[in-house]
Amino acid sequence: MSQYLMHVAVVVRDYDEAIAYYTNVLGFELLQDIDQGNKRWVLVKPRGKASCSILLARASDDTQAAFVGNQAGGRVFLFLHTDDFWADYAAMKVAGVRFVEAPRDEAYGMVVVFEDLYGNRWDLLQMKPPVSAS
Image (cartoon, rainbow, N blue to C red):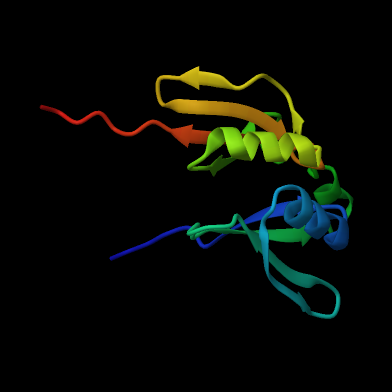
């Protein structure tokens, strides 16, 4: 049996502002934007071979709205892997991404925490290649 994550829902205030941020600021691809009457089915994904996309889900009531920007209680919520950390970090800075710390070199790779337009925390990271056993 084979399984994988297909979509992760991120609760947003507004579809259009979220689409603009994820596509124009983070450089994600808009995969689908389908009007379903009282809501839209909006999928975005990082450019490249990523298999998991983000479902931008507009908050439909006050309870959901209370979680916009705080889906993980202030912890890092999503992890954006890259194969060129410094190029992506520089492009994101120019685009106005809010970083909450300086990049750091950890045992597992380069990482920096940033916040999306609502305040959800993300890691931008480039993993170090695995050490081969000789």
